[in-house]
Amino acid sequence: RRVHLKFPVRFRTDERPETWHSGLAKDISAAGMLVEADERVNVSTRVSVLLSLPGERGLREIAGLVIRSEIDEATHRYLIGLNFIDLDDESRTHITEALRTTDIVGLLRSAAEDGASDVHLAANHPPLVRVAGKLKPLRDEPLQARDLKHMIYTLLDERQRQAFERELELNVS
Image (cartoon, rainbow, N blue to C red):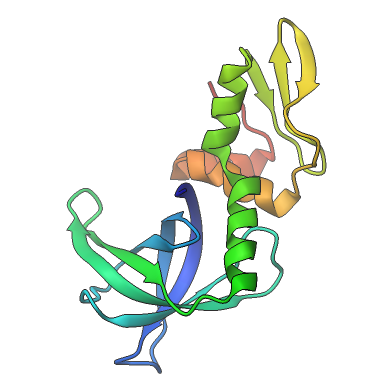
């Protein structure tokens, strides 16, 4: 299952291992990810991606193989599709768990299925939904502050991100 989750990444190719490039993850699954970057990377190129997944404090380096490389006409940046290779079980499990806890689209889908009129998200609290005027938890485990930031930023444009960082609050419809 692929989750739309935007977060910064760095990557390097096996052809030029001394040069790190910056990019933005657009979505990720336990099998691979889509990265937006200024640099073109050819299909079939091996890369190393350095990223910090939700719930992690440190960086994780993951090997990948480029399976897609094309220009995004809207942003004039490259979209680079990667399949993870040589991924150990611990990393795959961690990615799967990180995606489960930060899937904002899945969370909103669950809220809609419950007939919720509102969704309330706050760090260190479980997500709440308002159904028939009453608040109820959507799940038991609380949202970690860092995970919540990843979730919210996935939905916001740059102007909304700046307002959120300035005000530390944002109401959206």
